[in-house]
Length: 416
Image (cartoon, rainbow, N blue to C red; front, side):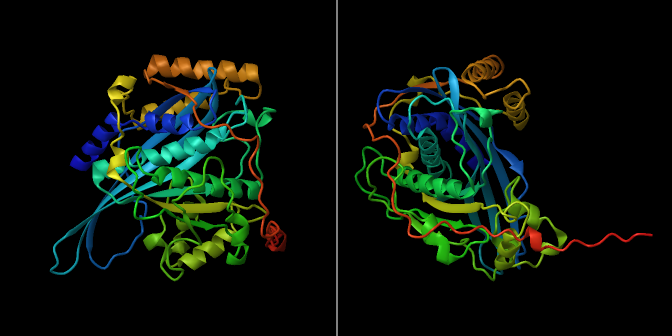
């Protein structure tokens, strides 16, 4: 529990808001944004491996923190991110050996969305992810963990956070394969940005970020199409990300013993089945490839990355108290859910500029009056870039999506 309190103290001293603001400042100069972050205190939750089997004694406690980030431009919401951060404390004792204490931190980016109201062409969503990943260095100071696991389930949907934004003509909605490629490029940049040294340091981290990707139904032969080398924006990085195909677990390992189960996730739903007890990781991937959410003509992807941490990045330089955000509070899960209800209420509409402005103002007034959650203004100061993203030749044609649903024979109804 002392570790949890230390984590909250660091969170207050170096809020997520400042990390995201720093990332947005790297965008091409001449734009203004506002950043507002809502996050909860740590709450005890179920284990991420609830049916794990161990041959020795162990005690485990898992805490969860929920985070919701809003980016506005000219008073209108333009981008948002929702994430779940899990801290697992585990004590293991085997034979006559002294008990061993382990701490693991895993972050699951659950939702990332744009409203279609961004003025100017710039990668705000990518900068938002990059700043958020860099904020995870606060766990190095609080819990002294060497790395944080970053998890993303990429699934194409027309809207995640902004109601009716799918009808906004300014919103670019990606298809299945394009979204997988976009997430790979985004995580490539975000992990490089998240692991770069602090401004007063010239020495890089000795451990490079490692990222795994698996597209259910695809094979390693198709991986070059997903692992492109194009940079989302900015200068070339001297800290490459090592990309690997597949999950970071042995295929023969029991899935319940190693695969983390996050809320509202296809893997969690499959492993909740009683007949999944003996599944190996390989069997789980086979079931994913023909499942309703990841098969049947759909193309999704799981990204699992290890972000190495550095205490000097977690202890951000500068007097954060002067920014007016040091007292940003920790909400209960109940208050956090109230904000989500307000965000998804029937009167929220981002289908046009006028309705998006009105909805953004309504949410702002609610946050100001009910929770007094401050915002931070950001002026971009990065170098100008050419319009659009540099296109690179793809080594292969996009992989064909196999739809096996037509081959499934349904049982006939018995009449009489």
